[in-house]
Image (cartoon, rainbow, N blue to C red; front, side):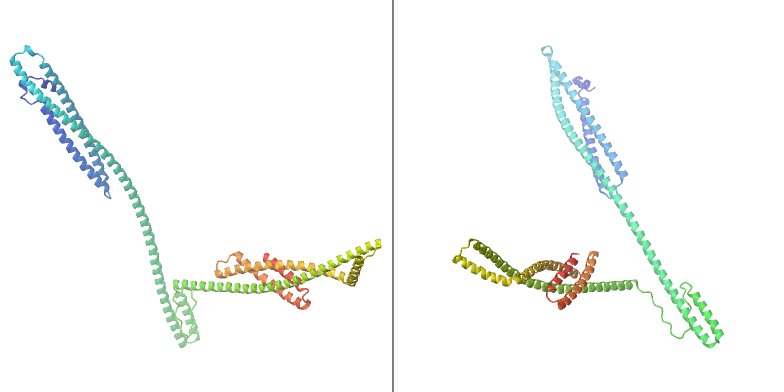
Length: 493
């Protein structure tokens, strides 16, 4: 229809054309698209405000999202219509150009009137072409703008959807956390309320019991006074009867506590003791525990001091043993030196005997041999004088060698015992610094063994002193060795 309208004769161009309708529709469509954009922006702002609120209205947000989608669909439809308008305008422009080319070919066969009619049509065609070109350029720019706007709108819509989803997840988690916190708070409040109710109930019961006790005490005192007064004024039988009544009344009054009947005496009744404060009872228990702990620490420290004193005495005893061993070792060294000298003289005597025998065989005499014989004879004389004592000295030497070995063993044992005593003293000092706190089962057994060892050593020391007084120095070294070996065995255990 647009093509037919554009190809009509020139006398009909004064009427409204299709181009005017297209331009008007283009303008209306552009205005509609602009309005849709504004409304979409408003919807986005509203949705963002609802998503940032603490309690968003999800139904309203869903309606707004549906409206946004509807406007997006309308915008897409308007863009399609605008594209159709552009296509129609381009087709009309092409048809007009073809018609103008066809109208310009007759040339010479046409008369002047036709040329006059063609000139205005050509001018109008040129004007129409210029208008079409301007419209096409404007439509293309509008399409580009619409495309950019649509892309931006789609990106904004996607971003908005992501934000809405993240907001919903955050709201759900926050709602669940708040609900959990509320439930926990309710539970704590209910537990606290129950505890307070129990405390109040207990206080009320205590107050009621206290008032009841005071009341019963007053009644008992009045009954006692009445019974006392009645017993003084009436006879024995009536007094006995009154006593029975008083006992029955006391049993009725004190039915819960089962208190025996109060005897009729003239002494004043002591006031009833008030119930002790639990806090004061707890403090008294704490003070008692502290006192017991202090006494235990003092006992442990005293035990450690006694053991350290015993160890110091043993240390002095070991020093004395070492001194005696050193003296015995010096004596043994001197005996060994004398024995060595005697052995050398014996060897020299043997050599002299051998030389005399060789000279007797050869029957030769010379001055050197005579001198040798003289020396040998002198040596023989000396040795013969000492032959009687050699056997005793050799036996004494063997005994002294054995004694020296025993002394060395005793010395080594004494050194080992001294090292053990030093370690034991360090351990006891460490226990004393700790104040006896945190003693393990092994430490307790160790202290018990130490007591037994001290007792054994004390007995051994007493036995050693008595033996030294009776037997003298010869048996002192053997006894010291035996005592040292015994102590070493105990310390090793």
